[in-house]
Image (tube, rainbow, N blue to C red; front, side, top):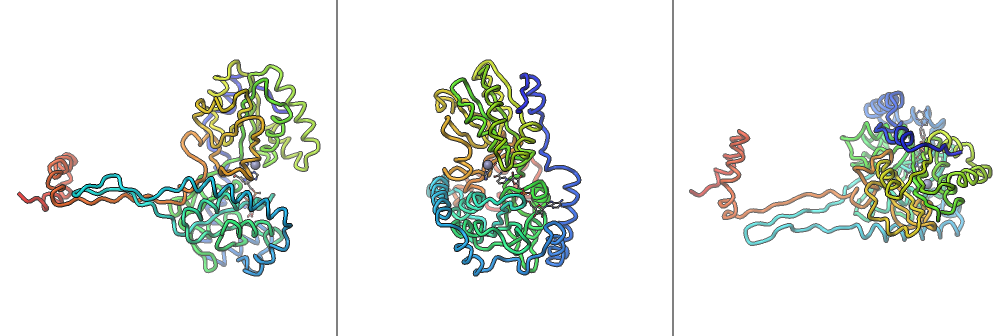
Length: 426
Ligand SMILES: NC(=O)c1ccc[n+]([C@@H]2O[C@H](COP(=O)([O-])OP(=O)(O)OC[C@H]3O[C@@H](n4cnc5c(N)ncnc54)[C@H](O)[C@@H]3O)[C@@H](O)[C@H]2O)c1
Ligand SMILES: N[C@H](CO)Cc1c[nH]c[nH+]1
Ligand SMILES: [Zn+2]
C-alpha cells in the first residue's frame, strides 16, 4: 500500500529540490487577480470572492460578541477541558522561548544591545475548507499573545455561509484572539494584507492553509511578513526491528489523512517491517472515515525504503528534512545528536506525532517540503522584532574614527567619512 523503493530510486523520487505544489502557476494566477482586485476595491471585491469561492456571503463578516458567547454553549465540557489542557501545555512550552531585551556591551563610553519588541498586529489563518482545526487556533495564537502582540485577528471560512464552527470560536477565546472574521482562502489573505473597510490590515500573517492560501501568502510577502509557505504535511518514520508495525502504520495514516498530497515516509533497517506495516495499513485504512484521502496519499505521494544501517537512515532523513520525524528505534533519545534537518522530532514508540499535533506543547506549524534545512517551526520569535541600539561617547568616537574613515574611503563613500570627520576634535 505504501510503495517500496530501492535506495537510489527513493532518493531520486523524493529528494529533488522543487517547490511544493503551492507554486502551481494557475493557482498563483488566480491568487494574483484576487489580491489586486481586493487591494483596489476593498469590501466590494472581498464580498464578490467570498460568494464566488465559498458559495455564500455571511450577513456579518465579523464573529460578534454574542456569537462568541453562544459558541461556549455549543461545545461540550469534555472538549473544552481538553482544549484548556492543551492550551496550558502549549503556553508553558512557548513561555520558555521568551527573551528580554539585552545589552551586548556596556561601559562608560559605549553601550550597545538589542531591543525585543512584539509585532503590533498579526493575522492568523485557520484552515476551514475540508476540516476544522481548533488545534491550529491554539498553535498560532498562543505564541503571538505570549510575545505581546496587541491585536490578533483570526480568519477562517464560514462553514455554511453564516457561522464558523463553535469550537474554533471557543479555542480563539481560550487562546486570547482579539477578532475573528468569517473569511477564508485568498480573499482572507488579501484583506489582512491590505485592509478593507471591514477588515483591518496587519503587519504579519501566519498559519497553514491549502494551496490557494499558500500562494496568496507568497504574493503578499514583502508588504506584510509571513511565517512560511506551507506545503502538504509530511512525516518520516525511522524504525528498526523494535518498532511496533501497527503503531508505525497508524502514524503514517495520521499524516496521510490530512490530504491527498500529504507525504508519509518509512525508512527502516528491518527486513520484515515494510511488509508488516503494509498489512496494517490495509487493515487500518479500511475503517477510516477519510479512507480514500489517506489511501491516495499513501499510494501516490509516499514511500518506504530499507537501509542497511541506522546511520544511513538518519542521513536520508536529514536529506528529506521532513516536517515531522518520528524515531521508533531502540534507545531513541540516544539518536538526538544525529538529527540535522527536521521541523519537529518525536522520539520513541509512545510519542506519536498526533500527541504534538494537539497537545504536548511544541508547535505544529512547521516547515514542509525540505525547508527544515533552513527554517524552523512557528515560535514566539515569529512575533518579535529585534532592534539593535548603539551609544558612543565623544571619546569612544575619537578612538574609532580613523578605522571608520578608512573603510568608508575604501568604499568611496566620502559622505560617510565626512559624517565621522565632522566630529573629530583634532
Ligand atoms: N501545517 C499545519 O500545521 C496544518 C494544520 C492544519 C491543516 N493544514 C493543512 O491546511 C490545508 C487546509 O485546506 P482546506 O482546503 O481544508 O482549508 P483552507 O481554509 O486552507 O482553504 C479553504 C478555502 O480555499 C478557497 N478555495 C477552495 N477552492 C478554491 C478555488 N478553486 N479557487 C480559489 N479559492 C479556492 C476557498 O475560499 C476556501 O475558503 C490542508 O492541506 C491541511 O493539510 C496544515
Ligand atoms: N499535522 C498537522 C501539521 O502538519 C497539524 C494538525 C492539526 N490537526 C491535526 N494535525
Ligand atoms: Zn496532523
